Amino acid sequence: MKLIILDRDGVVNDDSDGCVRGPDDWRALPGSLDAIARLCRAGYRVVVATEQPGVARGLLDLAALGAIHTKMQQAVATAGGRIDAVFFCPHAPDAGCSCARPRPGLLLQILQRFHANPTEVHAIGDELRDLQAAHAAGCRPVLVLTGKGRRTLADGELPADAAVRVDLAAVAAELAP
Image 1 (cartoon, one colour):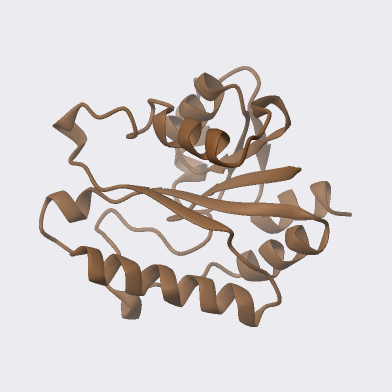
Image 2 (tube, rainbow, N blue to C red):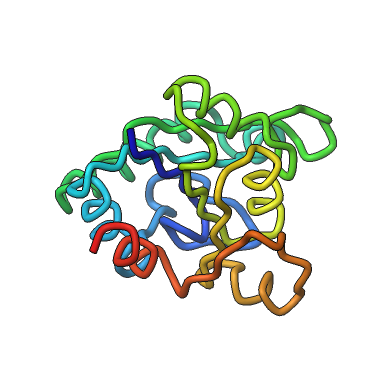
């Protein structure tokens, strides 16, 4: 089975230093929906892994988060793709949970659920902690330069095994030519 794990904010949709609080705030990045559809056509299972500390902070509730994910999944379906699952961490950054990146807990849950070999799984993110979690889980980390990706690249200290691509469309073009 071919599996790819995508961070949500900054990879699939616009990111901000704030929080996507509802479906009206969710906007797909140019080319991301078509990239997901391309990956699906090539036989990839697509999973989104997202941290949502806004839930713990009271900035959005689980119903709003569900509505955001429904909008995302409908937009991907309209483009001809699908998202097989959405995993999320609702904890505050200081909660010490195992699912908040750079810890690999969320990715390990996905790998277990899909019975995937981590060395064959690309994990795409726009922040250093995304790449660190992918590396720790044994996945293939890929930094995209959307969202916070350019700042992450400029800051340096990427894992040695991290690849860098301009956006999700470039990743899809490479993995699903």
